[in-house]
Length: 109
Image 1 (tube, helix red, strand yellow):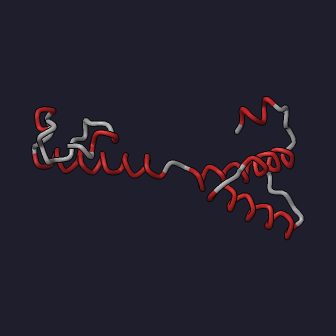
Image 2 (tube, one colour):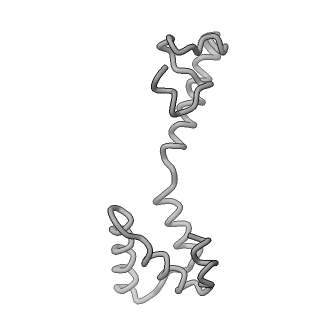
């Protein structure tokens, strides 16, 4: 979104918020945009860019990535405590989760 704002030379806080909301369409993004627009109309006050950007990041942060990281840490701790922390334990035939595999291949172990 920052690239869009820079490319179109949108610099004012209110203009940034309006531009971002106008670009959100479809599904949950459109519902979020409509909710924010209703709040702005109701309060007759556009939020600061920093507050709006923080809210967007919170709402749309990659929760899967965070959960995957937590899963890897927990698996690492369990493997370490059980003495199973070796690459040889992570072959494709093993039913044990492998902390060395990527999230995309983890389910295939």
